[in-house]
Length: 496
Image 1 (cartoon, rainbow, N blue to C red):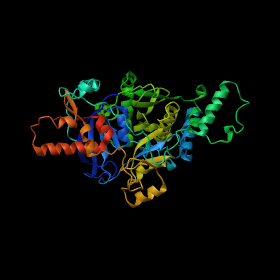
Image 2: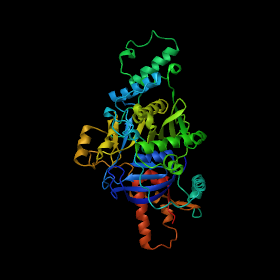
Image 3: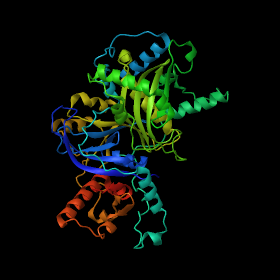
Image 4: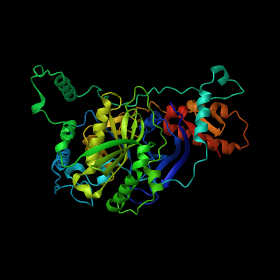
């Protein structure tokens, strides 16, 4: 496990990307120099979200537009009629090359395809880029700090507790599963998926007589059925659509960066009417990530980390999904596409392909079965479309448990825009940080010193009592926001 290094910026105030009012969006922010993939999974399961290296958590009780983290259980996902129309339209286009008119064919509003909701790129969980704080993070050598922390973790226990050397305590194993839920969902594969695997296996063996009598001819087609329709006989298709999963740190990303940046600029100008950004701004938003690729033996084939899923139509890049693959989910960061292909409803199609990616990974990594769509903002009607995916769950902003998004919850959010989703008033956050945990919080004091708070408060300090108390309050606030597990595992940059 790598070492996460963050600098907490405290409370932030800025313009809201949903209601467009100024000085009403309230959040907490921190700069992440580096994030372990499991740490980021734990953070987003507490309402955090990243944009480049900047992480933010909305102050939902106070902000103008409360943001609830939303996920879809990909193994329980069911296609809607609108989804099927979009998939059929794509299949016909690939087969025949015909551009069909009708819902979703416009170029200005994106995917307005029946019940899919507006906003082409937004249909795949894209949030407006948050307003970044004016404060710049402290300058540190991330590699040296990482090596320092890792070396100290490996010191013998006796040396670690000696007065001569204060070391970082061993990484604590989280007592929380990445998918803690008020209503646990079975990890078992869907019956239909089992049926399909059985048929494929028997077909390879030439055993057709022993197939179950209720073969799926009359069963409803799955997402994989639709996506595999044109993959089985691509030679006869008019067009070829290929998806490439590209790590943001890899050579293939660098090679395709000109095409990706040109597509992003075209999308921003045409769909969002935004002035084009330079390449550095694009990279800061959609390439820069605090996570390194991790390839544990029990993880997915591509590993964990940040990726671009590129959609190549013949030899032309027509869409890009920016995603993070984490121990319990695929998290959608952003999606952009060529406005010339708006008739294909690429925003919704992209989210379906990302759900399919989750389903595929879950076959070998059962814990990774969720598709995170960012934030559900009920007070902003145009952002409610995310809740229309079946098997969608919202994160309680107080107990951090997941609750199925039902009409009852929607009605409560109609009445009051902020709502504690957990109906049990006595329920508490099992990862709650208490003052008794303060001594375990990890601090980076300078390029050569990292320690826990217990030893830090014993060090000589020239600050006034008021300054020390203010510093303590900041560390406590940060620790409550990230939870006791991350507070004891991540390094809090405490440098002036």
